Structures are given as C-alpha cells and as structure tokens.
Image (cartoon, rainbow, N blue to C red):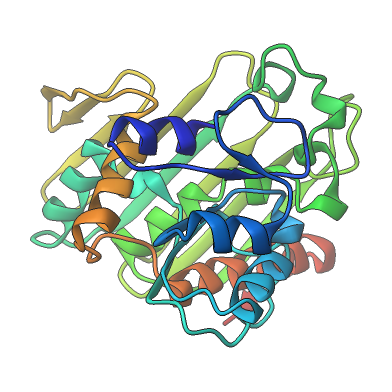
Length: 291
C-alpha cells in the first residue's frame, strides 16, 4: 500500500492486483485482467517473498514488457530469474536512496574503508501496528520470512559501498521467545573486495529500534545513525532530512525518470541471496564460507 500511495502521489494511474481484500479505488483479483485492462508500463511486485519467482514467471508468460520493481529480497532462496522481455527489472533496496548512504558512497569513493560495523534491529511485534506478528510472512520461513531476509538492506548497501563479499562467518537462528519459526537474530563477520573487516548484526529483538554503521579509514572515522538522520564525521555533526517515504519516493522517481544508475540490479540482488545462503550455511556448519 505504501508503493500504491506514493506512486499515486506522483500522478501515476495506479491499480492493485491482490488476492486479498484491499481498500483502493482500482483493484483486480486476476493478473491477466489487470495487465489487459489497466495496461501498466511499470509493475511493483510486493507480495510475500516466497511468491516473487512465481509472480515474475506469470508476468513473463503473459508477455509483460514494461518496467518491474521487485520488493527485497528478490527471492526466498537463491534461484534463477525467469526468462522475460521486461524493459528493465530492479530490486527494491530503497535504502540506497537514503541521503546517509549517498554521502557514504561519495566519501568511500575517495577514501577506502579499513573496517566497518553495522547494526540494525527492531522488535518484530511492533513492526506492523494492529496486526498479529505471528501471522505475518516475517514469522514464517516458508514464506521467505526471517530477519536475515527482512533486514537484508544492510547486506545490499554494504556490498554497494564496500564491494561484494569474499568470505563470511555467522551465528544466527531463532534465539528468543518470539512465536515464529524463522530466524530472529544473526551476527555476521565478513571480508569484501574493498574492506578486510566487516561486522554486521540484524535483529528482530530490539525494543529500541536502531540502525547505524561505523566506518574507519586511514584518516577518518564516520558514525552514521539512520534513526536520527545524523552523521558524525571525525567529530563534525551532519544532519540529514529523511522520512519513511522519501527513500521509496526517490527510488520510484528514478525509475519513472529513466535514471537507473543507483538502483539495485538483479545480479547484485542475486549476490545478496548467495550471501544469505552462505550466512545460513556458516552458522549451521560453524565455519567460514568462501565465495
């Protein structure tokens, strides 16, 4: 509904295809009818993660040839993209469009990182007010849930900023009393092409939500706090303006304007999936996994 609301605010003619009852002016319960009658040039795939591959296959089989944005992560497990004739397809890692990430990207192009530490956590029962967290896709590994997939923004932007991963070790699983069958916490240690020491924790357990990253280079330490939209750059405090919608808005505007450079490609999103699989394997086998 966030995507529909934001695209409507951009004067797009928006329709929703959903198997559920949805409060929106134009709703279809059949994908073929939606494509035929609405004739969209841009489709957002935002159903449960485990359904993404099937939905993309449906779009391809129906001959859809416009733009596609798939919500992150691209799939529940690493698998091949269906053959298609889409004009373009990207994955919705909207945090790339956060001004803090944009600042870090510009800065790291000039000064390579030596080490990085990132943390993101939010208490799952408070994610979606008014809904039972136990019935959400996040709670069910079969639907593509789990903190490692839900909070894979960090895996994406760390790869974008610091280069793709070379090897990884991890400890993770379902550790808390939360009534879910998916993972609720992962601690990850990895090396990438441009950084020798990267630590990351992702969690469903934080009753005080937090999202931050610390990066060290030869001459600088930068501490970024996404929850407060603040960067401390060697003691210099920088404030940024951002809200929950702005990164989605900027991402959609980039696609609508044909500015694709900052978007997450399918290849990069597939690499994130390989990293997720490697983290799970590393945790199970208690060993480093090399790419």
